[in-house]
Length: 292
Image (cartoon, rainbow, N blue to C red; front, side, top):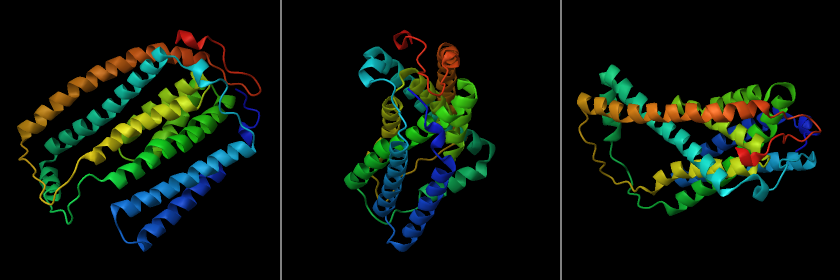
């Protein structure tokens, strides 16, 4: 993998383009009849624009994203390790959201009444299996979003930072930026952890398609929630303080276990990431990837 033209990619231009297309999408949302499908279609167009921008940019600048083929970079064992690590981080993110929500509802009881009141509002329309919305979400969030986010954050930002700083510093900083882009408490925490993992995977495999596939897999798990049908009369069970305390206990234990597992994994991955040096005009492979 060479970085001969990676400095030529103007990050500020991409950020400006991102802001412009986001504003345009927001304005279009206000002009078209509101529906979940229309909103998803606009998000789809936004992601198509971002994918085209990053791919046309790296193509025009002749930036190489892959230093070796998928067959050489990955084995069944390595797929299993990276997928399981992704699942652990995904589970940690979901459990953290539930844990924090239950904790806040115990600390601020008035919030519970507001939440229940909001959830018990009648739904205007009956929706069954949203097949069209599900397909749009799959294309947008599980295919297009992983492509432009991985190409930009790992393929460009991470590699650009690696030219000036240590690989670990580049991984942390680029992942912090990636996390800040995902607003919303534990979502930022989850995105940061995933970002560091994908930096490691990209540095080790030298193939951008590996983190893209894993990113798409993680988003697919979230998208599965769209398959649940909704009705006009949502039934919200009575929630007591004891229920919330039980929720904290049931989520807190696996959160603790997942954190221990992540610490063990990081003790193995982190030293390896530190030894990988992405130098301009030089290949990054200094170790046999089959050992990790």
